Image 1 (cartoon, rainbow, N blue to C red):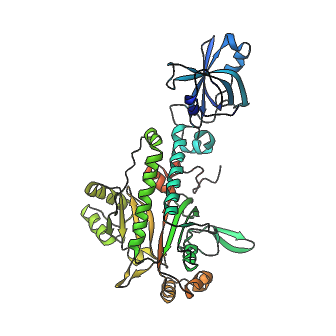
Image 2: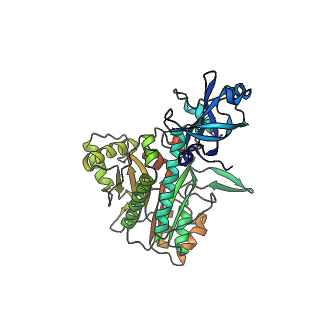
Image 3: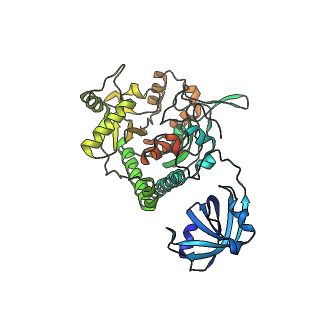
Length: 438
């Protein structure tokens, strides 16, 4: 008999045979009768054990430790005694795996454990419905993103994660020994994306790990994260990139709402889809707004973490949206992005932008510099040696179209979408300054 899920039992007739499996969540022994609650991926079902019918096996069955893996064969019985409207009368109960006692982490307990305890026992933590639902919604978000790029004619790519040079400088690079040569874990697929624009692929995207050796511990950063990047050729300006980004956000959020409304309801989350076009505010205007709101700076005036939160609240109240672009970043604030195109009329301003979502940066991107001589000048200005980027720069000598793109932190997208307190909640096995396992 083929195993089915708890939700599939609803389609069966009263008395129809079935086979289910899952983790034993709870045992309630009333003496002559016992109720086993078993949890599978789709929900919880109840098994009724009658001692007179089960016989000598009754005591063994009600002694099975919680969270053991069991297989149940039996028949459906329609009843109004459970919320599901049915229970299972078993003909066979098989234990595939006994769970040790005591459990290192409660699964159905009302009191939640400390984060370190939960992540040390992540396999148990994920058995909780509210934790599992996070990753089911995350999966829907990825499905929606991929559907959008497919519809827009993008090619999904995979670029190297062991690289000879960093796209954004060496201060935040993880070094590795590559057969006796110095190498690094990739901060971004940036340079490879641009090389593919020179290769004629025109529209590419990638969803893959990226690494930042940043020595801090916050609720919005991790050392390993999933980056969503896209790059497209033959653009007129950064407006084309912002438009594509906005449509991608709109499509993916609508997909999540359409496919995952039941999951969002259980999580208590209401998803708001931005209207197109998304509001754009130049960086200089953001500074003026922050000054009006009473923001003070110790050093130079820039939109820091506090400023992002203040602007997010301001835009939400004034324009009724969680999304807005910060545009026209000063060149000195994008000092590591030597490939950023600058404004022709004012080289002190770049064509780069950030997309803010609920007071946090979600996206960074813009138009890239495709002119070889200008690119060399910008690298030298930042005291970078062009010889270290020979394979990258070669692409620009033989016909590079105007192009641009973005990098989006997928984990942060999930965090903001579901209003998670910590970005680690939306990552299966997070990596930060203190956690290397499991």
